[in-house]
Image (cartoon, rainbow, N blue to C red):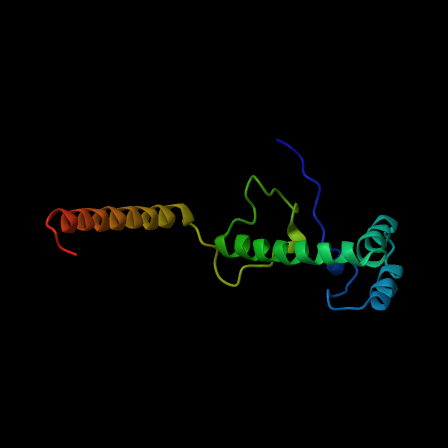
Length: 131
């Protein structure tokens, strides 16, 4: 089993928001006791506007993925053990979805059958000269 480093939300770790300005982020970063976290905040969010913009794009995507994982009940899967991406995974709003594979297989099967029926009908129409 491989070990994964935890992915942390820098904004959440310092009690800030992506909408906060650099001054507020600097103040919040200065209030944390974790020197490594403070260094990360300065390096990623405060010293370079392009780097912060890139982090913000990734930050939004990770929250999107975390939300999907929570809704599908995939928060404690073998691929995401423990707290690997805990910062980006909210609690599900409803009970976890227990059988996504079964429903997905049914949907794929239905789609495949529909495509086959449609193709057969189109081929029959072409053979009979209908349009």
